[in-house]
Length: 195
Image 1 (cartoon, rainbow, N blue to C red):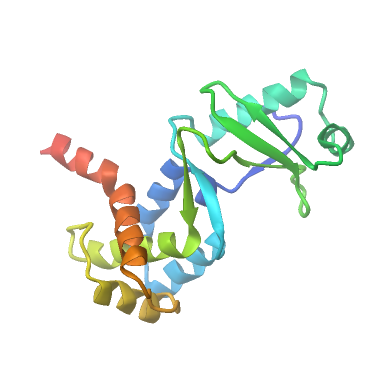
Image 2: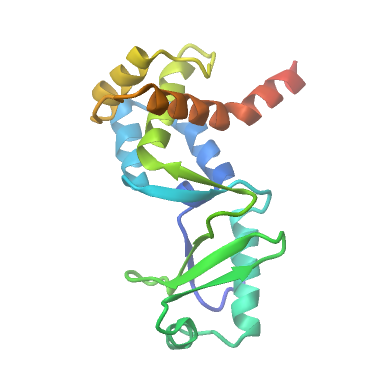
């Protein structure tokens, strides 16, 4: 991200699927205290995850170029450009749309995240994602990630590993299993190509 004139903040754990998947691979080798602590960064709400091919650096470079081209080079410039609404949406090189806001804390002036309701972006519930990650990490100890788990297994992981309440509906169990499959998609393709 060299040459960025206005510091940008992208929470890659929440908003960039390739980064999230790389963290899951790392977490599979960690102890539960570390995994649980790092999963807290996901919060408890919903968020949008970019699933496209651009790297974090490419996304930030595209947004930096847009801001620089429009003479937005300081926090004051950004504040004025955002106006009363407090955010703006821009389209970058792969036609994905990104929301730009003024960062409320820290040295980063602009916080960016993918806009919702667009191709290449998936809306995710934080606790479903945490549960799916915990199921994957728990099962990776056996070296065989699987997208199939019972509601009992899901609730055991939620309660013992994450301190979350049990799921109360088949619908929630189904959504968690869909999340597991979503997170494992590339792994299956890689294991087939590696064999």
